[in-house]
Image 1 (cartoon, rainbow, N blue to C red):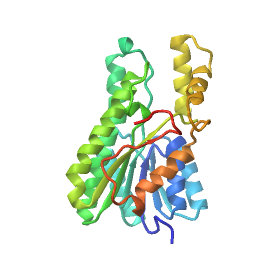
Image 2 (cartoon, rainbow, N blue to C red):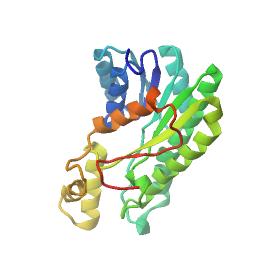
Image 3 (cartoon, one colour):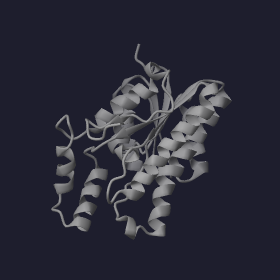
Image 4 (cartoon, helix red, strand yellow):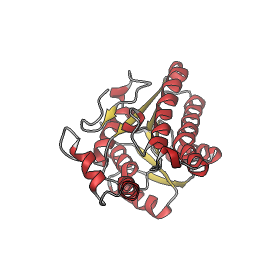
Length: 260
């Protein structure tokens, strides 16, 4: 029997990158998956991949900054997939800017997606687990930047530190209901987000395109960039029974770049 057989999972930001890899990994472990994102064509493509893996998938278009929409996504997943067991708050955006140049609009947008989006997801999942009278698993995306502040990533780092704080508090509040709450902290992953980080770093510092990415990858002890599948494998662990005694944690999975 697969680790997540007969389980229902919802993954935000599942249309591409790490979110897509998580959705596929959970499906391969037997879960039925609700794919939540803003881009319907990308969601549909991932849903087809999930179905090809032998599992069931539904899609739900949602802006994670809208609390009501996140709650509606959880309700939809339960209704369409016949249960609700796993919440993965993966959606997030990058912010690359000097501390001196962060604008109010950029601050508000990044906080809404990266912090509010996680908070609403935690709330919606916990409420659903309690309504169903069952245990549940919540995992949220933090980052190596949630353990260490990086130059030109100060605002992004602040949001990822906030995810760790929400994770710890929620773990303490919901433990008595059998709900575990953890975060995962990737490093330098070869996704569109890192393409954007590298491009903006080049604009700000004058470094050639690709140089910032190369510099960070060279600092990884295991000698290669991280893949979305590396992250998905760890999230699968957090979603499965082997992590039942783990809550309130935000482990680094970065190939050996930041050490805590």
